[in-house]
Image (cartoon, rainbow, N blue to C red; front, side, top):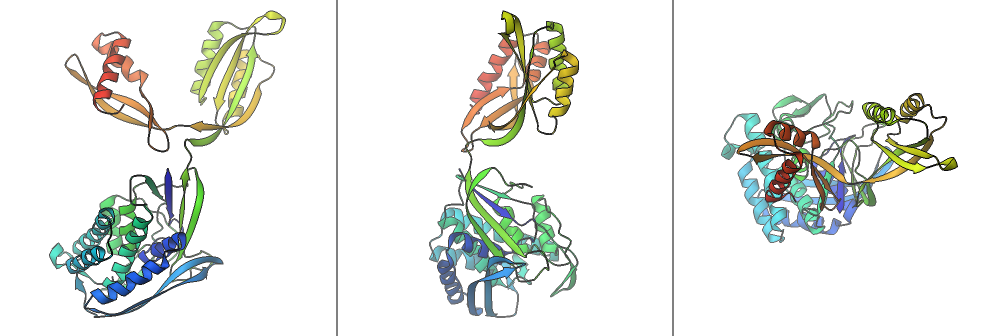
Length: 412
């Protein structure tokens, strides 16, 4: 499955930074230049809209920068008028239904934020700090590229790191305002969106930037998902932030069929212990963080029966588990093997099931491949056991009831 990671954790995000990063990623500068010409022609209040797309450097890193020459009427336009203009321009360039829906969601967030901040009805909201032709270029340009690349669809997973919002103060038409500005903060509040902080007194995330981001993804991650990187794009902001590169990075790749991590496999052979000791050993290992414990009967030296104890551990915890193995079994040695592990993507869902006229909540472990195919669904044993005990029904029958109702709910 294709994946796109937007990375505003260090220097935030603005509309022009995201557009520039996507141009760098996809090499679609000519289409954005044509869009700028069309916007100038379509907006009666826009006297001039010229853009230059060129390479620049921020703290030594090359990135694309969009330079805008804009002349338009100074008066703020009603936000709903800007929305009507966006619909008309989107239709003229033949945007898909997905792209148009994305544009409208972004503009709705911007309009609602302006209305709430200024305490006016939505139909009276104006774009003040947001130059409307400039805003339309960013929003429609991003939608145009993502649509052309097939990224605005269910077959692409989009992720973002938490956007840095900055601090300090900015000067606006309404005077001095704190960072993040009210419209940005309002959009963050509406979407309950996680952000990060870089110790810089500047506006790092703009209203247009955050409106684009929240409507692209809710998958906020601190680390990139496992994937094979195919393309990387860099978009530059206007300010120089000293040692911090004022860039937004966008990374495209393909996710591995399964997630990958590394574990440690511990193995020892026991030939002189009892079943009671082994049972206690399993319990103690699991209590102390073992990921899995397996006991395999076998034949050892001098044809004596033995038990092979295998333990899967995290890299951080294996020495503690080795200590437990030696103390509890008296073994003189433990094999330690660090190995990669392929694991299915998994999550826990809660479902309601009805048994003998009574409703119960059961946790279900759903395992999926990276392309979304369900591999397995398994009810949590402890939940099934509790229902069996409470309802006075054999465990196997409860499992049967639960699996049938999961199937009806289309989880299988």
